[in-house]
Image 1 (spheres, rainbow, N blue to C red):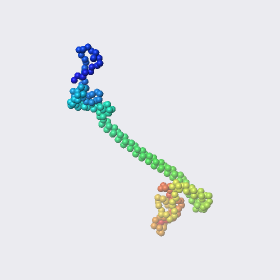
Image 2 (image 1 turned 135 degrees about the horizontal axis):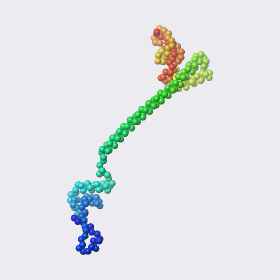
Image 3 (image 1 turned 90 degrees about the horizontal axis):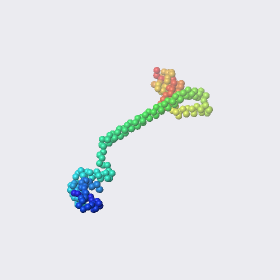
Length: 224
């Protein structure tokens, strides 16, 4: 159908002079984006034409509406790219977990090594003071460090301080001989005991926690 698109100037044209017109064959109404039935024109639309709608025209109208609304549903997602990115995220997550586990293990090793070094340093200091403790013990045995004297108070404080760092004395007469703790410098055969027993303590043993700093040097008696 031909749609008359005459202008106000057309009324001034001489009678008989032809006017220009064109036919609007667009499938989609440019004003509202609605689909025009196949073969319909703006005049036919006003008359309620009900011809079947072309599927391509319907899709075009849908795209027009989505563009007008700012939608982007028409662009299909790149499933391959999405899967690649998800795989990369999973890979980085696993790598992060491995790095965290390695960090924790490394920190534990460093802390354990530092603790061992600390104990070794303390043990070295305590071992260097064993000679002083021997002199203190001999002074007690000979009565040179009597209770109530300043020397007795000083010796007691020294032993308390060293004990706070794990130092302890061991080895006493009557204890069962243990080669892991005692060093037998002399032995006396005896039939009245079934196992070797300490009969004399020449030097007491010292240990820091479970570390033997010096074995007790003793004399034993027992079965030959």
